[in-house]
Image 1 (cartoon, rainbow, N blue to C red):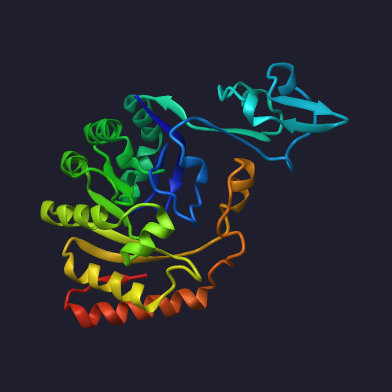
Image 2: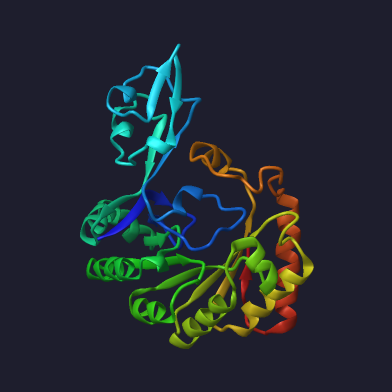
Length: 301
């Protein structure tokens, strides 16, 4: 058994081909720019979108955490039991639940509904999060079941986890999407709450095990949008032979509404989304640095 918070079908940005992405619950990192803040807690989380609320009061009939007065809905999180019953009652999906327990067999059964698309496009299943390494036994079960079903497998990870987990899952993983967030050790702790030392060590381990990696680098204006970080990305890609590609992930604002819905502080509320021309400049800068450090052809996009 394990916890997931979403299964997204027809994904085209989480590995090769058309894929189904399984989002696993819980993450030890607290990235300031997290665009899935509802994934951070390992517990079931309840969100509320006031703009969708009809003020009908159906939820209040069964749960004391919800009251409606003069057509206005009031949600008391301190009284919430997080059992998710209210989400089934909400007529306009103003109340949402993040996280539920399930089995690897049930997840792969859902994933296989789109197997024809994987076969025709070279796609498969991607396990993301949250941080999938934080549910090591469940992740291994998912990968084993996926391989039994003949699926191409991708693990989308920050790399923050135990080396034993990497060794266990590597034989069942066709590709890692490795989210490299910050080169500088001190800034990595400042931005994410954890050290990047185990992340680098685990990447070296993946390199020894021979599993290919796409290095994915979220760039956030005013934080890691810096020349020394670009040089750090290039050095890491050049010295790690398993890295086949580097993706620049431009900061966006799509997660802003989730912070309000789940009553969480948004540390990047005043940071603007990155413009396409700036992203193009960063791609050029990293590409140039990589070409200066290695003769390997590492695509940057």
